[in-house]
Amino acid sequence: MVVTAKNPKKDPAPKRWIRHALDGLRSELTWSDLFFGMAAALIIAALLVDAAALHNLQRPTPLLGQLLGFFLFAAIFLYVIWRYFVYYQKRHRDIRSHTLLIVAVIIALLSVMRLLTTFADLLGERLSIPKPQDPSGFYYVVPFAFAALLVTLLVDANLALIVSTVVGILTGLFFKDIHIATYAVVGSLAGIYGIRQYKERSALFKAGLTVGLVNAVAMCGILLLRQGGLGFPMLATNMAVGMLSGLLASALSSVLLPALESIFRITTDVRLLELSNLNLPILRRLSVEAPGTYHHSLMTGTLAEAAAEAIGANSLLVRVAAYYHDLGKMLKPEYFLENQAFGANKHESLAPSMSCLILASHVKDGLPLARESGLTQTLRDMIPQHHGTRVMTFFFQKAKEAAEAREEEIADADYRYPGPKPQTREAAILMMADAVEAASRTLSNPSAGQIQGMIDRLIDDILSDNQLDECEITIREIRLVKESFFKTLSGIHHRRIDYPGYDFGIEGKKPETIRLRGANKRQAKAL
Image (cartoon, rainbow, N blue to C red; front, side, top):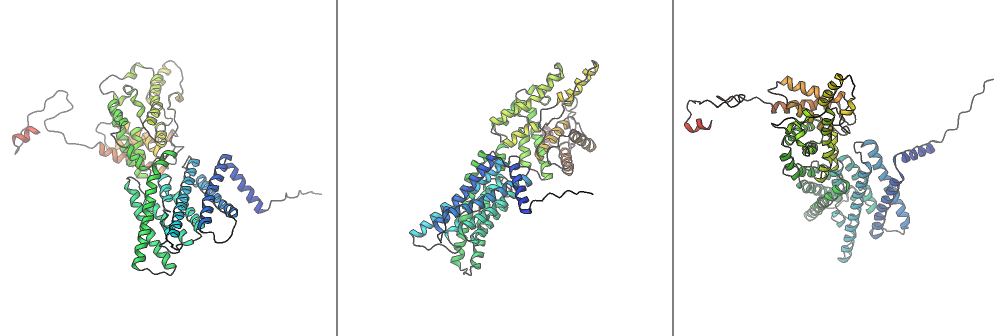
């Protein structure tokens, strides 16, 4: 007789789903994350319920019940934002910092919303004006869009879309009005698309004008839905209220942006533009103390910026990072070949291992200089990443030849940079641009084939050394980077016609006297 074991009783589907959800919650969040999340949800709930108690509570509902309801909604929204970071925004390494930033922006918006609505209620009571029930009411002056503007500038547009949705829902709960919730979402979306590029301070003002115009149109639509008239006085009022809301959003964003940049150590385009100023003291010092390194950095920035534009990466970030990537060479400029204009090479009298230590030290020495110069964490991270863990080929080969003569073996690990490897596409582009620019200095009147061959060999070596394994750059993007390097270097190494009577290759030779047909003495003398 065959005995069959009974199947173990399966958990009901709801119980299994709850267990999986709790397991995921425990694996992603620490106790400190849960504590701060609950505290943030409680603050959001308190802001909402206090405002409702002031001017929207029309039946005797216990405030504790409302607080619990708002707390549950806020907790759900915060967890959704966290999960979105974890699963769909993995390129943001500092998830906790960005989540805290979004929470701070939402709390700031709700605080401003509560203050302005309280002021509107007090003003209405003082002037004996009934509570506004149409788009010309005081509540529509609230700058709902400034949260979306800040998140777009400090994180990205994808997160701003989610924040806009959350803001719209919380606004609807706050006012118990679907129309003003729609108004908040529409204005926020206009802010996201109006601030696509933030490379000048006036961009925020322009975005505010865009938000104001869209707000005015939205208010007209709400009035039509409420079957109201659209006479000239009402239209003018709508335009004024909508424009005021948009301009308030841009003004608040301008005020809060520098503070949030500093607190959460986030680099915006305007900060990058400030750091790209070649008259900054640290860059002027680099140009004086290590002029060869300075010009190498400028050319690397040109190569890297064009390549980043070709693949849709942050071209401004990679150009500014190129300006500062070799700051550490200022401490020992004479040990780097580009700064040895006419003197002897100091490495000729050093052992390869000592030369390796000196070269690797410029990465470590550059970090304190970058910190003292006020570079953001994003830029400082790219200083060690631009070399990754590559081998110092020249000194490794030199040491290897010496070791073979003594019948010894050496490991390439002793001749590698400390790393880490590039973590972003921008850092990968900087690594490739740095190698290509340095090698291009060895070319003299190169052909197109020589330039392309040099680029292919250098980048293929980087790939075969697995230096780009930790960043999200594709083979197609690497091909586009190669094409961009070729175009830029072909423009740099362009041909020129020879100057008649001049031979710059022969030292000490004086130019011959030239007679030009139809030229007067002044023209001939100038030539």
